[in-house]
Image (tube, rainbow, N blue to C red):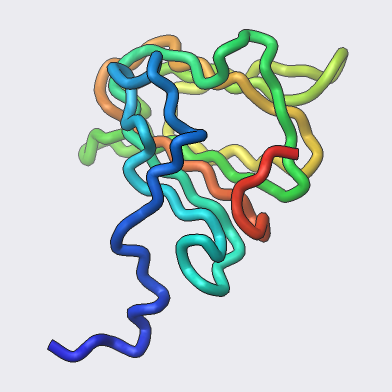
Length: 150
């Protein structure tokens, strides 16, 4: 079979970055992430990072309850439920923190959703309070040039 001229745009073997591996999350989610792409490291000319993983048990992303970070790029977080008959039902309850100081706010949701985090805005932790069935979690760094904290 002839190789497509667009083969260069496909990531068939995603990176499995050691810095994203968290031993304490192995029994609660895909760890390392099942899909991870980091800008030019993965696909020449790509300017985003993408992380995709399944969540199947309660857990916390962010080891410290007060852990927060920000990026010099915009980021989008997506959570998708796995019930094909009711895709808006997340099948879980998730807590997502954004902001700093008096502006720090806890968002709690149980529906499939997308959260936009503008560059420079502190965010995290993510707490999976209740997980009734597996859900898909994605993070996308927009025009990031790849993943870099701060």
